[in-house]
Image (tube, rainbow, N blue to C red; front, side, top):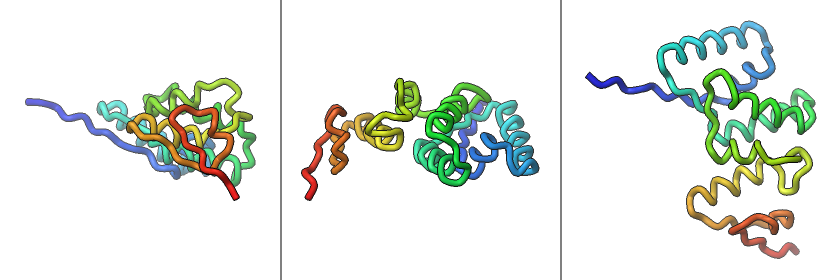
Length: 139
C-alpha cells in the first residue's frame, strides 16, 4: 500500500497569524493545525504570491520596516517544517534586499519568469541589472 503525502499551501491569513501571533486565538488555532499536519507527514508550503502579499501586509498594516519583514519571511522558511520555493529562498538570501532596487516582489516575479524559461518584460528601469529582462522605454 502506498502512502500519498498531503501537501498544503498556506494562505496569507494563516501566515500573518503565525508571524504576528495575533489575534492569539487565531494564532493558536493555526499553530495547532500546522503541528498536527506536520506530525501526520504533510508537506507545508508558502506560495510566492502569499509571500508577496504577506510582505505588503507586514509593511502596510503592521508598519514593519522592510528589513524586519524580509527577515520574518526568511525565518518562516527556515523553521517549523514550512517550505518556500527555490526562487523565494534565493531572493530572500540576497544581501541588502531591504534597500535593493528592484525590490523583493519584483525579484520574485523575475525569478518566477526565469524558472519558467521566460524573459521578463517590464517598465521598471531598475530591472535593467537583472538577466533576461527587457525594459521598455517609459514616456
